[in-house]
Each structure stands twice: as C-alpha cells, then as structure tokens.
Figure (cartoon, chains in turn blue, yellow):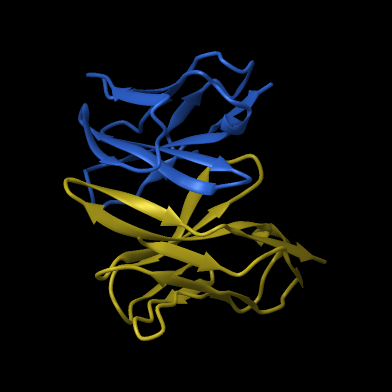
Length: 113
Length: 114
C-alpha cells in the first residue's frame, strides 16, 4: 500500500459525458501527479501540482483539467468524453516538488462506451 | 523531446533464469533514470533508480547501471522467481521549471514459470 488513494476504482460512462477522478496523496506530500495509461499511448504524464499550484504539464488534452485543493487532494476532470479516453488514470504523490520518489495510487479504470 | 525505448515483451523465463530487460533513452542533459514495476491490478512501485552516470541502482536482487556512453539503463537479475512476474517500466525524469515529469517506456511484461 503506497498510501495514495484514488476513487473510484472503476468508472463506466458514455461518450460526451463528464467525470471527476479523485486522488488523496500520502500524508505530508505536497505534489500530486496525474498519469494516463492506455494501450495506444502507454503511460503518459498529464500534469503536476505542487501545494495547489500547477508546476508541470504534459500531454493533457484541453478537455481535461485538474486542480489541487487546500487539503492537498486533487481532482482530474475529464469532459466531452470520447471512446479513446478509456484508460487507467494514475495519481502519484511526492514529498517535495522535484527530487523525491513518486508514490503511485492503484488507479481509476475509466471505460467510455 | 525525451524518450525511452524498452524491449518488447512478453519475456517468458523459467524460475532461476537470468533476466535482462533492455532500456535506452534519448534526453538532453543528464536525467535521472528509474525502473518501476507494476503487479497485476496495482499501481507502479519504484524498483530502483540512478541519478548520474555510472551509478548502479539495486533492489531485491535487481540491478541497473546508468551508462551515459550507450544511453542505456538495462535491468538485470541473476535468478528470477515466479513472484517477479509483472510489467517493468523504464523511465527518465526531467526537471521542467519548478516541477518535473517522468517519461516512461512502453513496459515489458515478464512471466516466470516453474
């Protein structure tokens, strides 16, 4: 158990819908990262937040957005969903902003029908 | 941009066999390098890391050496066990402004049989 929790574990929805994925980092970790793992694209970095502020951005679509709240939990919002958005979405947390190990949550499996 | 290339899987070995999973990278500067392992139904776990050239990362019998001259970070284990069956990801970390990001290879599935 990494100490990072993600909810829900599974999510099934239809094209065009909007969903929110939630991540709670390990106690004391200030950074949260979001990754997408799909068969087509492999494991891709989406975005990093540190203590509420966006710090690094990867291949995140405009239909996707994220935020980190004052209690340090983070949400990833996916809108206008397409079939190709079906994937495992991982959250990872890290003590600081750069050099420490990232600890991964168990992931949320999103299926878009 | 930065990229990581791993050997295709699946790799199927008998227990106690020697394991090598090849990983090469393309990067500007001198990134830190990592191997992560993903067991079925779980998130990724850090297996080992190396932060500079000629560093050797090791953990649980696995080793990898950061080779700048060949831009490689191959994963090795002398004697695999059934419990090592998992997907292994090679990754590099680049620092971007005030943050950092991991770039992963495609993953190599390892199956170890009795």
